[in-house]
Length: 90
Image 1: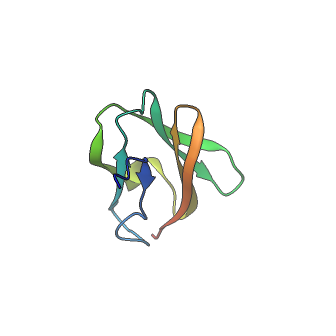
Image 2 (image 1 turned 90 degrees about the horizontal axis):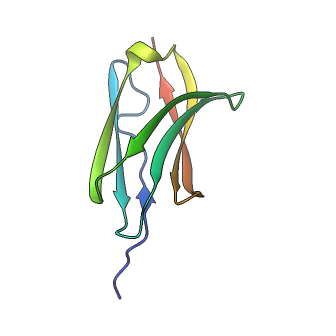
């Protein structure tokens, strides 16, 4: 059976200090895909529009974030695929 569903993986490393990498997979049917980063209050901090299908990665630099805990979500074709937590240390 071919599993062609989009996937979101845990960022590595986590916690991170300078940068972290979020690996994800976008299925061929993914017309519109975005990774959103939210603070713990649910406020959107960043968004990254994703174009390329298949196994991909997104590198997050600490320069746009303050130390703390964040959520990140993969939204594909208007549906939440997954939400995970990441921690930025000082």
